Image (cartoon, rainbow, N blue to C red; front, side, top):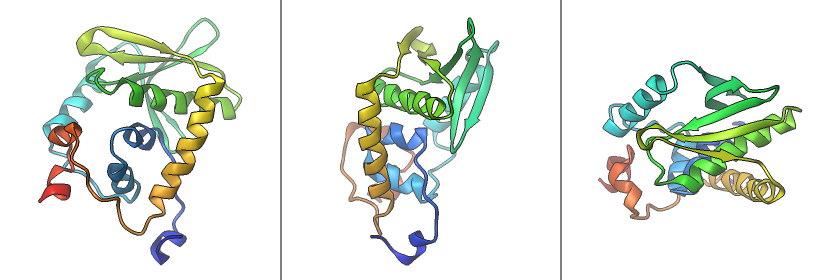
Length: 173
């Protein structure tokens, strides 16, 4: 079910992998195998800037298992976690990433509310974890692990996301 190098390595599903799962499964494999993208890529830099300087009054980056939640605050006796994105273009990916975090918290006995945030567009969307999302996350977790255990990444597929991807040279050179 994979190569010898992967058999001794513990693989984990993270919120980032859930996000990329809905966009590019090749990128799931690359990230899961610690093949680092071009960190000087303008889109990575912009994403870091938006995350760092948006919502200055809230706490940044809550580490949860193998994931990092962008922002969080205590609401009226309920934890509110937020996922900050540059754009709402990949809203479903962001929604499922946030649902993953809510699910991970629920497994620890913490019920939380989620907010997707798109500061450049001045938009917010509340995300509530429901049974349908939990079922989909269960399927996604299993499929991400299947991808990670492949001995090679899935073949590249040209999609619109490739234009802004930090792995473009890796996939298409």
